Image (cartoon, rainbow, N blue to C red):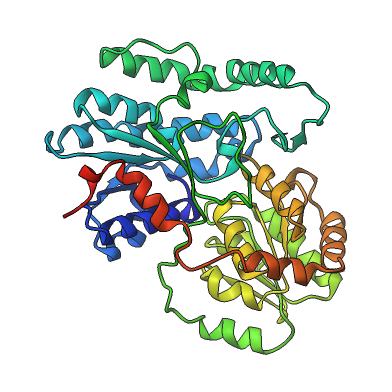
Length: 410
């Protein structure tokens, strides 16, 4: 579930597992079919109401979870019957997004022996009481005792998570003859047989309270058009002047009009060329000067090495692509894991973070000007780029998902 940046790591692992001889089925929102079907993987499209993208609460730091939960329930309801139809004598592993863990647990009642592995795309998807600890845009001070932090997370669960999700989870559990659970946050981490991080330990070290057993992976980046060249108009633009700033706020964000307006004004004040990436042309000012260009989609792997900096929402896929390219980043987070990703980019010394709630032309100019003037920025971005190796971590994650020799192909 989620945007293309959320999809691609799963797709990279699915293709690697198929190459190792496994039969792989791929379930994802129907709109991702154009990415998956060309690979030849059996694809089951799940229902997705794209009207959710226009809900202003989707990007709210606290109300966003409720929007996502309600939007994904029709899709999640398809998982149990899909697994129930699989051959009962065939070993089966479910590799799932954390929000699908309640349904994955139900699958154990219809396919005994099924293994469940949770895929954590970003560090913020794993609850912890240890530093660095952010709650939305707010950093919890290091002096706050661990006991107080645990009490705080329990309050967050009771206040924001359980009222949204617990009734749905327990109704489904009761229908399958399972006992209700008292709290979603306390229970969810106990569901998987294995947890896998789709990010490396140099980006986020393992915390003592993360679920076990745990396999540390890497960024399984995937480019569906690895051999594609940049569009002719973009190539001409890049060759016509200095490296531009690149602005995006995510492929799934239909509410970024103000963001692109501020971006256009800030680039003008800084005297910088700019590329605006969004599939929604109406979000970008209509009268762009020759020093600015709109594109609906561009493979970041091809574009970012030619950019002066990337300004983006902090989605984990976009963040990882910029780290690999060695492109300085200004993260403008809205909700979900984006604040934490921005803080980690800042801690690595390869970028900065400016919460979207505080975004305006003046702050954007100051943040970008400060970032690009930082001493030693090029050396630090190159050092991070050297941490990326082709296929790094993929084999280890695949071996973990096989669980035992009986899961491996002959």
